Length: 196
Image: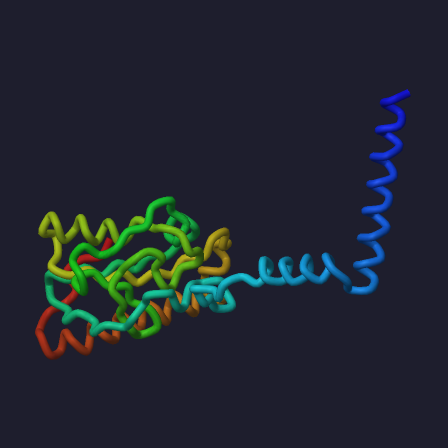
């Protein structure tokens, strides 16, 4: 009998709390107004640190500042990074240039000190291209490395082929980098030695 009295009182308290909540919600009374303000504050996300284009490629980052593109020589490696998620910013580890402006991220006609995530690829996580640049410089393969990424996760081959939306961007990316190389080649006498 004592247990049934406790259950009755518990049920009465729960019903009263429910009715008070419904009444306070309908009339915007305490504690509902506090609950709504807390919910609004929690739902407002901090400003996004990244900007994407209509293809989902990263076009600006939180700490990305343009630097002067390196002078092209026979000892400058230019890597055109084209593909899907493995070529993009979907790696588990972030890397940054250990050689300052000797490793740059070429995007939209400008250079940025290379650091994950790279501009020009989709995703905002890590990538291994910057670390490849570090290793190429550490081993003396090149004196400077230019990374020109264009990666879109899950993209079909037809999008990269002639007439596809990514084909145009790929040609423009390669063309801008080539135009910069040609302009510098005529003044320095260097030329493309190999492609892989």
